[in-house]
View 1 (cartoon, rainbow, N blue to C red):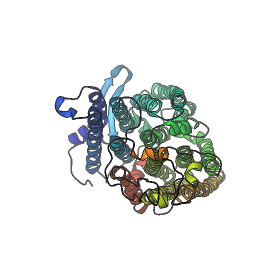
View 2 (view 1 turned 45 degrees about the horizontal axis):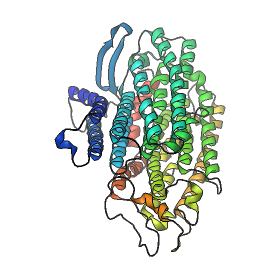
View 3 (view 1 turned 45 degrees about the vertical axis):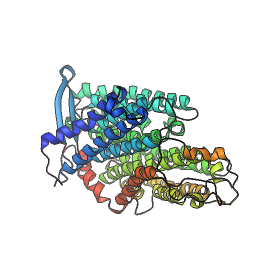
View 4 (view 1 turned 90 degrees about the horizontal axis):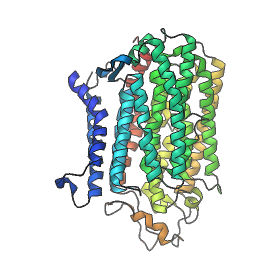
Length: 555
C-alpha cells in the first residue's frame, strides 16, 4: 500500500536528490550570493540558504516516505544500480527499505530543525558560510550512509561525516573544543581503518561488495573464520561510532565542547550510523561471526548501560560541579547500550527493539540537547550546581514552559510507558529473555536483569536533574547579575514577545520558550508522543525487513 502512487523513476530521482542535494547546497553556500539574494545581511542570506536546502531535502524525504510501498517494507525500493568502478565491481547502488527509511526521515528532520534554530541562534565562531556548508556536508554523508547498498560506498559515506563534525566542534564549540575535536577524530579514524580491512576481507573473499547480494547469501560464501575476523574488524569501527563501552570516552568530551546543533546532530544522527552498520552489514552478511561475538557484545552493552547511568548519577549529585551537557552525553552511552543489547540477541524482537530505540533516542536526546543548549544560552553555564543553587534556574518559576518541556524530555528519556523511549527498551529486554538459537539463555537473561536495573538508574538521575534544575528557590531578590542575564538576548534575530516572561519587579528577566525555539522543539516532542502511543507506525516498517535480514534474504 502506498499513500500516493509515485512511479519508480520518480522514486529513484527523489532518493538520489536526497543524497546529493545537501552536497550541492554546501558548494553553493561557499559561492558568492547572487545580487538579488544577498539582502541587507549576507550572513543571514547564507543561513536562509541552509534552511531552504535542508527544508527541500526534508520535503523530498517525506514524499519518498509517502510513495514507499508499505505493504512490502522488506523489499528495496527507489533503487539505483550503476557500475562505478568495474575493476573492483564497485557500484553506485542506492535503495531504501523499512530499516533505512525511518533513519532517513530522522536525519532530514533533525538537520532541518538545526538549520532553522541556527538561523536565529548561530553559535559564535567563524564565517556562517563555512558553518552552513559543513552542516550540509554532514547531512549528505549521513543520508548516504543510510541509502547506499555497496560496502565501499558505505565506508566512504561513513567517513564523510568526520571532517565536518570535527570542524563544527573545533571552530564553533565551547571550552576545550580543540582537545575534544582531536579526540573525536582520532578515535573514529582509528576505528574506521580497522573497519576498512574487514570490509575488504568480505569483498575479496565473497567476490562482491554488494550488500543486498551478500545479505541474500547470508554468509554461505564465507568461512566461519573469515566471518569472525570480519565481525571483529568491522564491529570495532562501528562500536567506536555507536559508541560502545569502553570505546566511548570521546563522546562526553565531544558533546560538552560542541555547539548546540553539533550535539543534536551527533547524538541524534551520527551515533545511529554505528548501530545501523551492525544491523545492515554484520547480522545478515556474517551471521556465524556475529553469533560468536554476540555474548561479548551483550556484556559490553549492559556494562555501558550501568556505567553510563552511574556516571550520570555521579554528575548529578550536589557538589560534583557536573556539566548538564556532559550528563546527557553519558546518558547516551547507556541508551545506546540498549540498542547494542537488542542487536546482540539476534532475534526479530530484539533487533526491532534496537531500531525503535535508535529512533526514540534521536528524537528525545536531540530535544534534550536543544533544551540544555537554551538553558546554557540563558544562564551562560551548564554547571548543574550553579543551575540548582538559590540563584539558579528554578525553571518552573522563571520559565515554566521551558521547565515543563525539560521535564517531559527527561521523563521520555527514562522510558515512561506511552512515550517513545519505552518501547525500544522493553522489546530489547524481551529479546534478551529469549535470544537466538545457539546463544546462552542463562547469560542473556542475566544481561536482561542488569539492563532492567539500568532503567531504574536512568529514572533516578533524570528525576534528580529535573528536581535540581526545574525546582528550587524562586525569590524576588535573586542574586543573578546583569552579566548572567545577558545571554538571553544574544544570538541572531529573535521573535518579539517571548512567552512566559515575568515582570522585572518580581524576578530577573528570563526568556521562556520563544517562537523559533518552539518551531525547532515541538516536532520532536510531538513525534515522541506519537511513537509512544502508536508504535506500529515504526514497527510495521522495520519488522518485515528485520525478519528478511535474519532469514538470509528470504521473506
